Amino acid sequence: MISTYDKQEARMRENYKNGMSYGDYLYLDQILSSQHRLSNHHDEMLFIIIHQTSELWMKLILHELEAAITEIQNKNIKGSLKKLSRVTRIQEQLINSWDVLSTLTPSEYIEFRESLGQASGFQSYQNRLIEFTLGNKNAHTLFVYQNQEELYKELEDALQKPSIYDVSIQALANSGLNIDQEVLFRDLSQKYYLNSSVEEAWLSVYKNTNQYWDLYELAEKLMDIANKHQLWRFNHMTTVERIIGNKVGTGGSSGVNYLKKALDEHFFPELWSLRTKL
Image 1 (spheres, rainbow, N blue to C red):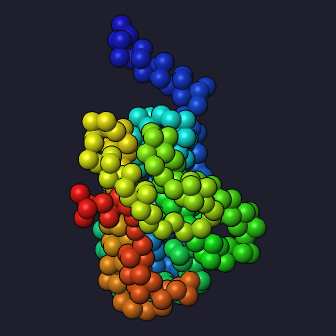
Image 2: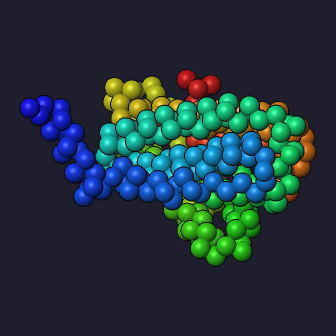
Image 3: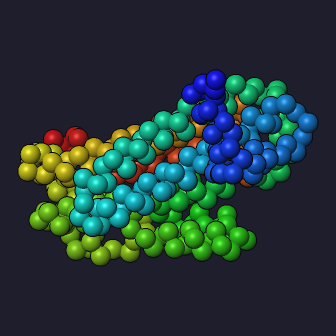
């Protein structure tokens, strides 16, 4: 007598034969065959996988941020909150990845560092897109991609698009809070600087949370993201310092010194400054 379990097993085997498999759906043959060491050193595999998985997480961050921007533009702040919460969870994965990379010692890294040539995390265009999408616009950084026409165009377009903070400021105005016209109609490709009308608007939100609950929730979600991004930057800097000290980066940057300067860059300046004035 054939048991129910055996019948189920037979059906599963038939499904695997004729249907789409787990590996097919995820294109695992392509993903798992994309780790090509340029040296024979064992630890280069760690280095490659950490950076590849980080790029996948960054792709998901951009996916969520772009959707959140659309929700806010459609005056659906509540719809953006879940997506922004997800971004912070993804950021935690990126932060924790530095703990894995820090198991790479200086002696191990120098065994394959020359194989990297001029390749550097500084060249990560997705990281640059995240910075732009969060509001840290800097046209000068595009020079890295001047020989990659498609990437250059994508980043150039991203410079012109509203960041998550631009649409959040517009949401303040849509709620009847006074925002200077020069802010609402500014050149979005330029770096954003603290504005007193925006600060006053956020102060009103924080002083009247019941009246502006959705905006208050939005502000705190943005602060969560800003805080996690700073932690990611800090862990990046300390991991690099632990592995290469103060050497120049493979891409020609100043290495640790460059990463330290990045720690001074804050997203959403009024959300930081209002805490002193509350």
